Length: 230
Image (cartoon, rainbow, N blue to C red; front, side):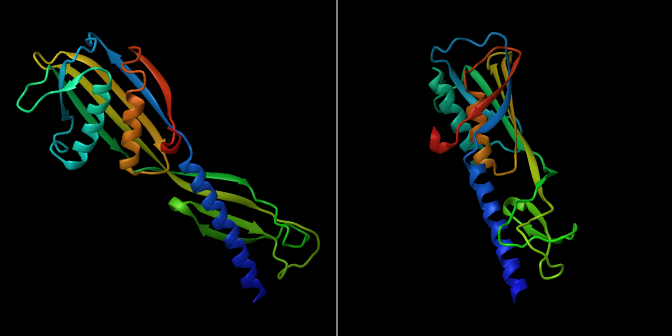
């Protein structure tokens, strides 16, 4: 019974730790690496534009239409305008985006001290594995008073966190519709422990249009504030 109580207390600590990490992740600013190139992108004077998918498989999709509307909103802020129904836009905007399957990473740190347990002699640890938010794995090691005995506050071992990192990217190309001459190329890339495109793509779009069109040939890190701080 005492052993079950001890394991339950340890599990509670692990869950609280995982919850704190999840909350901190939500409040963490989104960071993207953005590179942009341009040749003769005209100064905005109300030129019309049409947006299409760089990947034909995405064209006409509801999800793509949602992201295309976000891009259209950004271009409108800078002084361009969406082509009217039946109108051929002066500028052709190609939008593409995606995310990889993720890579596993492991992070290790010293285990926390726990005042509830007594001190013990010798490096004798009782391992415990807890699966946390987003697939994170926490491995706890502590000296077990019921197996080894001893006195004094102690908590030993290391916390090992296993998590998956996903790389997402968004590309934007703007050309003259009349002859296909390329005027602008941009790419935004980010890494995160979440693969939810409905949250990631809007952030990549905002990063792409931060100080648009930027300096040609320059790659910069752009930070997008969490929604509650914008």
